[in-house]
Structures are given as structure tokens and as C-alpha cells.
Amino acid sequence: MADKNNTQHIPTLRKRYKEKVIPGMMERFTYGNIMEVPHISKISVNMGIGDAKDNPKKLESAIEELTAISSQKPVVTKSRKDISNFKIRKGFPVGCKVTLRGNRMYDFMERLISIALPRTRDFRGLSFKSFDEKGNYSLGVKEQIIFTEIDYDKIDSIRGMDISFITTAKTNDEAYWLLKLIGLPLRNKPVKQEEVVEAA
Image (cartoon, rainbow, N blue to C red; front, side):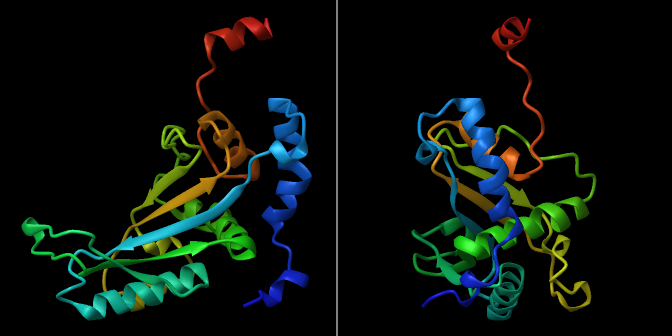
């Protein structure tokens, strides 16, 4: 099904990627071809519900909240194996998640950067250590209420979520600068000794 917004709405961060990120990455990494510049291919948002099997209403609430936050209907995630400690059997619902691409991905990222993260208590930037050696980055959100789409008076409980940025970068350094240049508030990495020598 085609996205009706594709011809009308171009997200701010999509423009920023073309106008600022690509030139910035080309300069920093001296790519020979513009096609070598990495991009964000998708963002996945996962919300776990520990007692979803015993409390279907909590799962329904989580689905509603994640739909509001992401503007996309989530899929229910199910346990891949038996977990005896939590009395969870393989196939039991354990949460919900969405995978965002295209304009929805950029719109979500813009709301996350400009509105949600600044509302996090004692927020001082995101760790630069949460890359997975494959160019992907994950962060944890402790409270869904940092998103303005959530009505605090209507929630049944505080829920956290995991947000993963899947990129085409080949190294963590490339992924770091891709996300940094697009606006994700990553803390500055310490300068390596060889970089100080080069600068001198």
C-alpha cells in the first residue's frame, strides 16, 4: 500500500540527511561515491509487557500507546522459548513492536529528538557506547510518558521501551557520525591520541 504522504510531506530530518548529513559524511570519511554514504534503513521500537499472558488489558494498552507514539499499528511479540522462572511458555505474548521505515521513521525520529528525549528526567545526552559493532544503535526509554502523544491521566502503568536504529554503516564510527549529524543527541566521544597528534 503506497504512502499517501510521500508526494506531499517531506520530513525535516529527511531533508537534513540530504542537505547536511551526506556532505558532512563525504567530507569526514572521504567516500569516493555518494552511494557509499550510510543511511538509516529502519527504526524498531519494542515495548515488553512482563505479565501480558495474565493481563490482556495491559497488552491492549501497550498496543494503543505504541500506535499513538509511532503512528503505526504494532505487532504482538511472542516468546521464542519456554522461560520457567516467569512461567512463560513458547508462543506466549510478551509485548509489542513496530518497525518504521521511510517518512514515518523520520517523523518518529524528529519527535524523539526534539520533544521526547529533552523531557527525560536528568537527560544529559545519549551514550556513545551503545553500538553493536555492526553499525546499529540501541537506546532504552524508561517511561513512555516522555512522548506527548501519551495522556498521563489515562495510562494504567509506566512502561519502558527499546529503540533500535538499524543503519547501513559498516563501522561504529560511521554509524556514530551518521546519527550525530542527523541530530541524535549522542555524547561526544573522547578524542583519540592519534587524532590530537594529527591536529597538532
